[in-house]
Each structure stands twice: as C-alpha cells, then as structure tokens.
Amino acid sequence: MDNSGTSRLEAFSDGIFAIAATLLVLEFGLSAHQHDLGSALLHLWPAYLAYVTSFVTIGIIWMNHHFCLETIARADRTLMFANVLLLLTVAFLPFPTRLVAEYLQRPGEQTAVYAYDATFVLMAVLFNLWWRYARGGRRLIGDAVPESALRAIDRAFTPGVPMYGAAFLLAFWSPLASVVFTLAIAAFYLPSAALFSRE
Image (cartoon, rainbow, N blue to C red; front, side, top):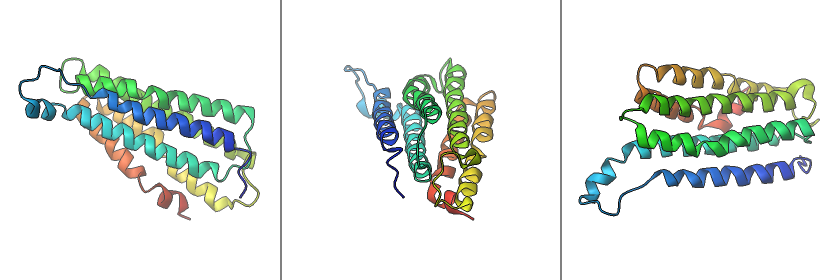
C-alpha cells in the first residue's frame, strides 16, 4: 500500500523516537572521584532498570506506530496534531526516567515514580486517541486494509491505559514494584506483530 500520504509524518516521528531513545543514556552518571568503580557501577542498578524500561517502551511504541501507519492512507491536520502531542510525551520521557534513576530506593522515590508512571499513562491515552481518530469510521484508513486488522490493533491497544494506570496505583505501595510492572507491560507488548495480527 502506498503510504505517501503519511511519509512526512512518519519521518518526523522516527526522528523524535530516535532522539528520545538516545537521550535516555544521559541518566547514567558517575563522579570522577569514585574510589571503587565496580561498587559504584553496581549501585547504578536503578538507572539500568529505568533505562531498559524506557528504551524498550519507546522501541515498542515506535514499532506499533509504524504498524499503525501501514494501515493509514493519509494524514489530516487533526491526526498530525494528535501525533505531535504523542511525540511530546515521548520526548519528555527521559526526564522522569532520570528521576527514577536518581531517586529509586531513596527519599523521594514515590514522587519520582508517580511522575514516571503518569507520563506512561498520558502516552497511552494519547496513542489511543491518535489511533481511534484515524480508525473512526475508517476516515483515514486505506481501502485495502481489512476490518479484521483494525480490530486486532484495537484489541492490542485496549489494555494499555488500564495497565499503566495500575502501575501508577501500585507506586503507592511500592515504587520499585511499579517500575518492574512497567517493564512487564513493555514485555507484554514486545511481540507487537503477533498481538496486532490476531484475528
């Protein structure tokens, strides 16, 4: 299917996804005066956890975004604006990721994880709105795309907001468990092609 109607939208989006994923590495930091480098590297485990969770999530969002665009024949101003809002949250993600890296298992960890989880909730909401707009009444969907493919994407997206909302609530009891659960959500969406192709 010719996706020339969405080529510029996809190119811009790919650039934002790539920049956001690259910026995540800035959450790692060590003092130049560390006496025990090995121990210092081990104590960075919250940064590793936050990095992996955020990077995998950005990667999955990028894959799903690409898959959705394969079904969309053209982009109008409303879709482009919704896409900008989605990318705004993606580009913001390195900031709460750094908060988790710095504060997990330290005073202030709950607030840091709340900011982290809230970003994911907003991202999931915006991604759903973006897709539902394009899909509603097939207003932007290609004529050759079967309805079964659209229903498969609907089913794959439906659990996103409730799951990230659950992660946000879990932070009230255990910020660490909340971050681990967020990583589990990323693992759930990792086989995105299989989720999207089920009839």
